[in-house]
Length: 456
Image (cartoon, rainbow, N blue to C red; front, side, top):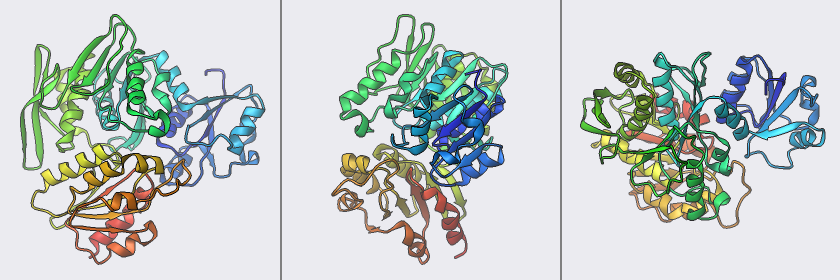
């Protein structure tokens, strides 16, 4: 990679791609790219010196990216194969690789700490990155969310041997990595458009464990289905929140807006860990992130200080309003198990409040494959506003719409709503706790939703 002078990213506005763009820019390369539509993130990237275009024709590609000898092209699997820019690069002798291949190059030349799982990997990897960065050991971190502590999804170190990577199972991307240590947070089935069935999905995680380098280790959530297939010389540990395992929590104290617990490790413990984001699901996330820090020798005082100061990642249980009479929380949850965990966590925090949810389903295929599970998870809310499906990379599937979820939801009050009519719909509502959920573009409406809630 060192001999390339410029890097062109196709799908540059994605959260995973943007971390790599920032990394390449920090390494002194010229960075440019394409994305379909402008966003707050693309605005930030442009302000940092990355040249972005929103027209896929080859004419929009800058001249300094048109020499195959000095330009590397990175693309995301969400980009269709007939994309005009991609076709130009492929037809003119450029080296074109997936985002995961670039991450593979980075982990092959460092001690890669790779966090995989259907859900939980962004928060857990972000916690770990914050712990390492706040210690003398440091890290380079490529994350799937914007950390509030740094307002970035990239953390850099000139001296640390560690790279923290969010290992994405979509399109088997995590098979390109070379982990030194790995964490698996969950293996609940997903991405059937890629894997076809649960057996293939689980096998993909088993293959991921076989990539861990001898001398490293695997840290698995206790009770997950994937069967590890590690090389000789790789240790296996289990973790949980409070259900035992090599790493777990004890003496959990929840109250007065705080969560404090004791971290238990083999032959050791760290008392009085306070969560900076006091949500019950984060006990489990914290145990996994602290485990990998503990295994790499980070002192207890550094771990305790970092966990208390961790502010979380944007769109991961993200408080937008926290007033006496109204609370607004945004969460990236887009899988039934994530949605169930998010709603039940909020109900535990606010047991006397009415919980309302706005949910934007993500992908036609995921809606088709998990409609009953989505309905069951959403039924834990007191009130539901269900938006139309966000298609992302997909074309519509006949007969698949939000209604196949809606018809099975059993909460007391529910309604279908278009995204276009959402703001008008909520103007006259008296919410107590409102959660916005989904991995689509609902986050672009959050400032307007917040303003409506605060100006009543």
